[in-house]
Image 1 (cartoon, protein in one colour):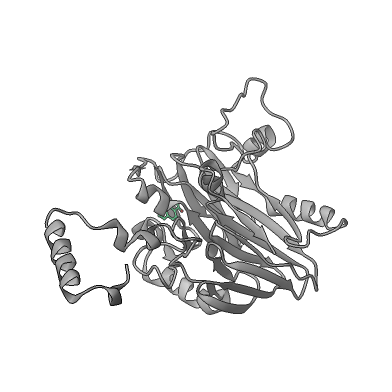
Image 2: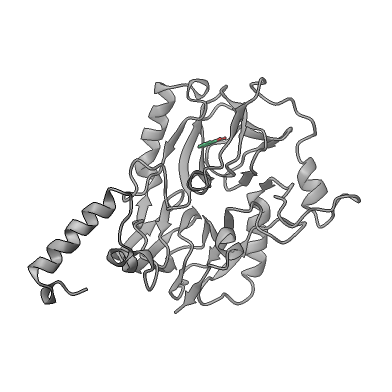
Length: 352
Ligand code: 1HN
C-alpha cells in the first residue's frame, strides 16, 4: 500500500510481477480498487453550457454546406468537453442540434436507440413516427421509441432547429444496436395527425389496449401548450423548495417514463424564485424554454455559475449540486437516464 515503507527491492519485484501477469492480460485489482468503487460518484463528465445565441449562426451554416438528404440527419453533436470524440453529452446520453431547411426531408429509418426531440427554433416542420405525422411547434417534446420508423420534413419557409436526445452511449455500451433504412424517403401517413394523442393521451385508452409495463408510450408528442397549461395551473399552488413546479413526462397508460432509457421533465420557476440545492446520480441535460436566470453547480469539478436564457442547453453531471434562480417566469425542460437507474436500483437524490 504505502510506497515509503517498501524496500526498493520489494517494489521492483512487484513491478516485474505486474509486467509478467500483464503478458497474460491480467492486472492487480489492488492498484485500481479505489477508482473502481469510489465512495461517491466521480463522473469524468464536466458541467457545460451551450449558449444558443452563440451557436445559431454555425447551425445555420451547416444548412449551406450539406443537405439533409446527404447527411441523413444534419446535426451538430453537443459533446461534453471531457468526452470529446465520444459523441456523448454525459456518459449515458447523446445530444445534438438538428437543422432542417425548407423543402427538405430527412429520410425514414429506424434503430434500437431511443430518441427525443425538443423543438427550439422555427416552424413548419413535421416528424413522422410509425405512420403518423406531427407538426413540430416550439417546446413540443416528441419521442421516437426504439425501433419505430421515423422521418422528418420541412413544409414551411423557415429553417427549423430542434434538440435531439438519444441513448446512444447506453446502446453502444451494451453492444445492442441495430439500424435499418426504409425504402420510402417519407412514410406514407397511415393515420391522421393527432390520432395517437386522441386515443392514448386524453385520459382514455382504446378498449382492447393492454400495454405491458415496459412498452413505450403510444403518445409520441407532448405538445408544449398542454405542458404550459399544466405548469400554469399548478403554479397557483405552493412551489417545492428544491424543484419549484416540476412535472415528469409519462406514458399515460402506465405511469412509466415515456421510453425505458430516457426520462424527461418540465419545470416552472416563478420570477425571483430560487431553488434549494439538489444532487442526484442521473447526469442531466437542461434546456431553457422560457425566461432565464442563473444556474449554480458545485461538485467534484468545482463551482460553476452561468446565466442562461431561451434555448440554452447545459449539462449537470451526476452528483453535482444544482441551484437555479429565475430572473423571469421560466420554463426548463430536462432529460436524463433516470429510468435506467431506477430500474437497476441505483438512483439516488439528495435534497440539501
Ligand atoms: C437519428 O435517427 C436522428 O432521427 C437524430 O432525427 C440524431 C443520432 C444518432 C443516430 C440516429 C433523427 C441521431 C439519429
